Length: 216
Image (cartoon, rainbow, N blue to C red; front, top):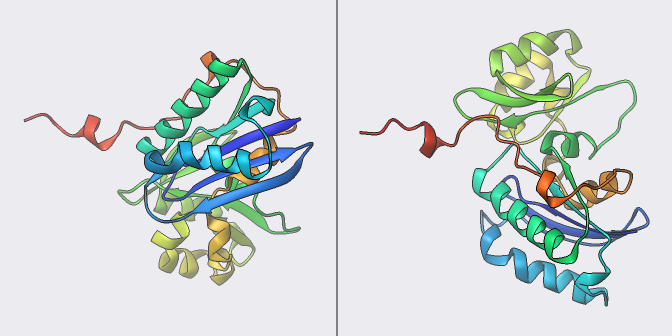
């Protein structure tokens, strides 16, 4: 099973390909939101570099969000177009699940959190992505103080208060692990049943700033 995975829900962009659950190649960029400018050429490059053809791909995988509206839309549109054109299935995974799969440490609480601005965070609750305030987040996980690890860009934004209220352990993860990776997405997708491109939609938990801004 050959999978091409794309993750562009945040500031970073990564593209990976796997075969039978083994990562064959991955390209990762954290150079600002240049997703729309380089994604197509990056897909062409990674497939060519391993001597594959895009038609060899058996399944596509894409992160559904939450995150950057533009980044999510770019990846979704690209994957759905490839899926439709090549008649191949798609696996869509939320960004928080990808983050949590980046790391596995026994006997410590792992929680993914993405900055949602306005002193709010995107988190998962009962397998559903929701928005909570940083105060409510801390209140919920206070019982795990010094035994919790927060993963995601919310750590960078709220590092001081998280460290104080949940312990220094909560913000001690290496910076590179706070990025959702296409390689992790590809690994998750290897055990998931793909669906038609028609069934895949972005995960927008709230409206974009442009949609929410009052019209004058």
